[in-house]
Amino acid sequence: MHEDELVTIEELCSAATPAPWFVRALDDDFAMSLVAVSTVPDTGAGERWPDFDHRDIVAATLVQHPRYVDSGDERWDGNAVFIAMAREAVPRLVEEVRRLRVLLAGEGND
Image (cartoon, rainbow, N blue to C red; front, side):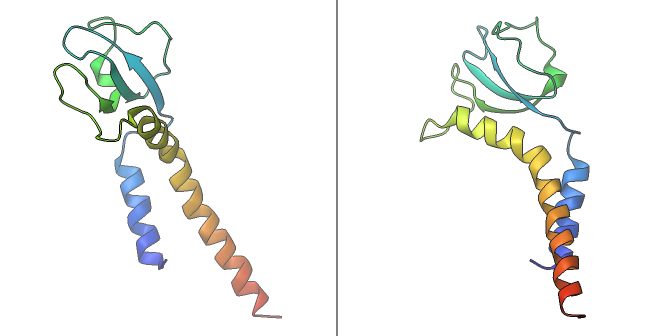
């Protein structure tokens, strides 16, 4: 991976809603069984709208009724967990790649 690719990844991360992100299970008559990625943690209550703030939702991996958002392989929970985890992991991976490059470059100078 080239440095310009790492810079692009960093720019994409910086342009996204700040971390941390959490998986939330919400439910209401308009978005039945909503699996979402949110900037606030899940309460476990499966809140129904308007008892949750739509501005906290970053992404949805399942909106079952009507079928607005779904994945053919039914991995909406796994997808939501991955998206939430990636928000913090991707910037850390970029840092780690750069750290390892510095270490490798130092080995060649012995």
